Image (cartoon, rainbow, N blue to C red; front, side, top):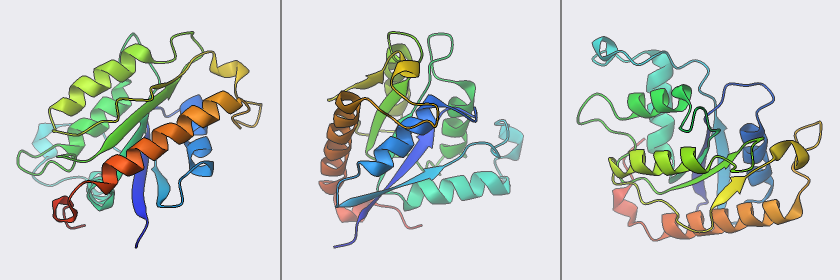
Length: 190
């Protein structure tokens, strides 16, 4: 059996992002049945409906990778009580133009890291609301809200907190299980 491909999307452009580091920790904790590949959002332009008839190359590649994935793992920071603009922008591009939504029905999981105590709780709940529009089944438990991240990652961005690593592993197990029960015919062609 082929391994499930999970696409990891970090909602931050920051070089030393804790969310990017959390995705790297997830790569180290993947169940045997899956592989986690990461994608960057740096080259995706601001959404402009005037350009959705001839999508920019970076958007075409982003949508190709979304369609090829069996599931999505979001790692989102929290900016002003919500998801970062760069993540919302990528979500908008992935759903456009009308009728060509690359997110539709794709299984997903969400985690997030923040230097604050709440660990991106509000951003994660907002992201869940957005994903409802695409009929994306999202792992409900466990929730991985990595608060006070500066104390949980070392200076090289390596996750040093074992309980957090275990919660990430449980989230990955739940995502693999969710993606495994999706009927094979539901995956769009790449």
